[in-house]
Image 1 (cartoon, helix red, strand yellow):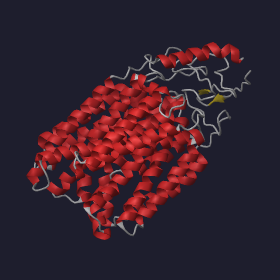
Image 2 (spheres, helix red, strand yellow):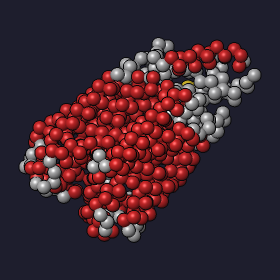
Image 3 (cartoon, helix red, strand yellow):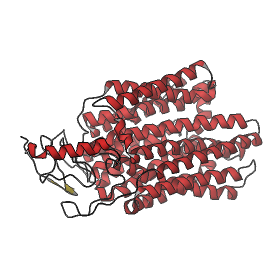
Image 4 (cartoon, rainbow, N blue to C red):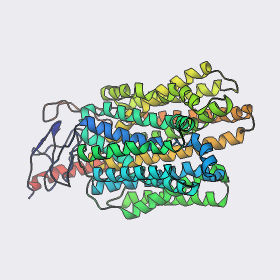
Length: 550
């Protein structure tokens, strides 16, 4: 017989006991299945020092938001911050074109490959603990990159940076979810998404400005004081939390890591070496085979790293498909447009970055509003609207791009794209985290971030291939000839992301209230989609076993 412990959270009762039975009164939650193993429930997962132990809150939601947003900014910024510094790096450190490409790709590769493993480590050994480990690795590797004496050591430091980012990035969202009450998560995700969106899109501006006015070394030194400031705050202000306590899934880890490595490596090297070269084809086919094995493993294994049953939820499947397609279209477009503004229109890196602010800086203004709207009307319509606006902005840009295009002609496209991107980021995070049960939020965050990174790598590869096939760098006009069809493809891909979002079930607000008298929060798709029979069976089983646990 299990020994019950009763405690009341600030935002609602946490149904947990030493043996893992449901609430004291026994009912299943309206928004998700009753938990049967001492896990926190949907209305604010409990922060625990160990599986089954009482929660210890070290800091409020405000501290969690600041810490996770700064850490997410650092990790997201380094995706594209190096691109505008490559000529200066080559001048100082030497190296061939392939070496310079690896200063970007080494980070992307390790980041994408290890994201799900980093999330799994956090769930198993403590999310705050692993967040601190990842942040320490990232900060130290940033200092090593800034002091790199040669191109090879810089590439190695960038790869280690990716390892640190892969550990800490998925945990930022999980730690934020644990600290913020369910009713206010939309706004918190809005701010978190705004900061991360700004980092992704403003990477070329920040990298170009530091390189032009200070030194390329400072694109890496920038991370060091930020990391050193966040580390003690995270240690003191974040509460520890765990996942479901399952052992690490080593077969799943090897299959996922190997598969993602093959796919991302092939995508990164394809434009440079050719898509039909034996090495690229081998990487792509081997990666695809390993990922297929990962899917089979996730369908059959009892404690799989990423249970495939999660994709039976239309909410989880829809938002992840939308995320992959969104990053494919957005990353590829920003990659080419930053070169267009500098190479064709003649702007300096700083000037080009400033002129892209109506797009890249818009999340700081609109994303918090988007988070608020997602709390009020649900994330599905907000995300879909944002994606269709982003697609319209790219299509408009394709219609006005020219070798001598004025900034005034480009401005409407930049504004439309900026608003669209802003409406996507915050509610998308909310949809991801609310589409699974609380103990699965860590791996859900890792999976979504991995798909985003794969989408970004795929976007740069696909857009570069279209650009090379239709144009080139020879003249301003040939650049425009390649850029225009690439933007059209990017717009189409993002529009497909909008259609994928429409597959997500509408928000259902349960009738009645929580046990503490507060209104129950809206569920984006419930914690298991109604089509997910496995989740329903688990809930029913937990309810049937409740009398026995007493």
